[in-house]
Length: 105
Ligand SMILES: [Zn+2]
Ligand SMILES: [Zn+2]
Image (cartoon, rainbow, N blue to C red; front, side, top):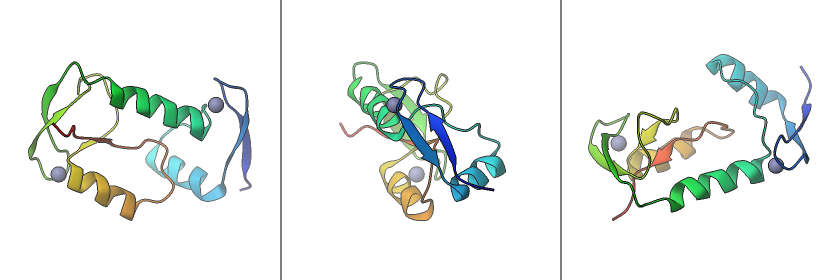
């Protein structure tokens, strides 16, 4: 397996999917990303900025009740409480489908 050069579907910039990332995605059955990291980052910030609608849900790791800014039924990402969210990035390095954090009120 070699690194793959992908073209971002949004800004048409080229970005790299490294071998480890490909392996991880395949293992998890996640399709390769079509947006570069900066477009993905932007999308995440947009999600984070939309704090008008708040939803109650449970942390998918510790099951604690948390408040989030996205409709849990429409997002495919994991939703984690602050603690498990931070923990997630300590345990997983190269991640495409980042979990979403709870909202701090
Ligand atoms: Zn892009
Ligand atoms: Zn938790």
